[in-house]
Length: 356
Image 1 (cartoon, rainbow, N blue to C red):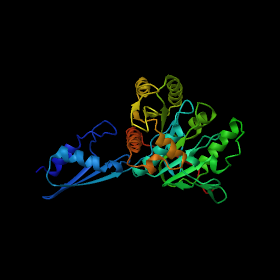
Image 2 (image 1 turned 90 degrees about the vertical axis):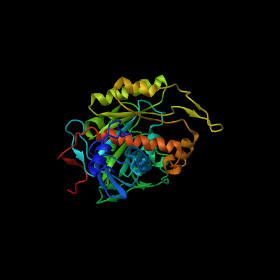
Image 3 (image 1 turned 135 degrees about the horizontal axis):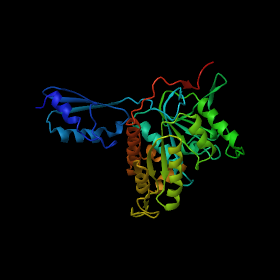
Image 4 (image 1 turned 135 degrees about the vertical axis):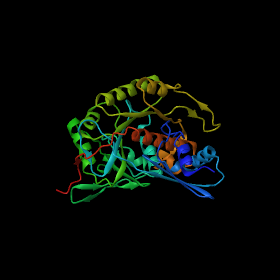
């Protein structure tokens, strides 16, 4: 039988599927004659990977003793662009963006956030699409849902499926158009962001409006964003707009953590046949051009649309489905990519949420 030190050294060579790199010195091993107790401490949540990782460890070690695996994680606040102070109650803000509308950005955001929560993280969503907020419907909130208010100043975010949510949809009605000019829109974004009482979040996902306009520039200048995700579809026109989104984030020093290719293939609801009706490998070519990861490829699926419209996103409504599994994989890869930046934000001043 291998000693504890030998077991640990072997485990350090195991490749992390989420980062593509060896796990390294993140293991603790205590073994006796009958069992091997392994603790893995990551910089991102990965609880849904338990069974898969147990199988990989057993195969790697070739040890007949009973394996006990504990997966722990410690999410740290990563550095943000410029000298923008961090935000109280939120460790990391991640912007989910697209260069154009209609590529499934909001659906990707909600399922990605829910997947991250299922991995064990504390998660929130800010719906920053002031003109067309959709997170309220996607998460099944009843019409007329309003946040509670603390001290006549701070919004208490409603929750759905364990995720804290704040949206302009909670402050208006579905029949009331938001006919505001740019400064009013950006002012509203900053108000609902900084005056929301976010409760100890590991990740706050911001569902961005399409394009590269006022809200995107405000985000870059005033909000401490740790990284971004760009959602695209494979066809050339979507890739053209997604390229502009990546260029914008690069110019304002917000890391692009990866690309999600949505509607990658169409799945026939009758026979299950997969067909790349919008083109093939567009997201991969975009990611290669900018040296970023393809976090995942999602199908054009009737089930995703139906369950989203019903306010029951597929990650919670069909958690064992292949599509939900893809979202879980994207969440883990996103967390691993952010953690690998290793530029921890230390002793940064805090904005928002003071009681002064």
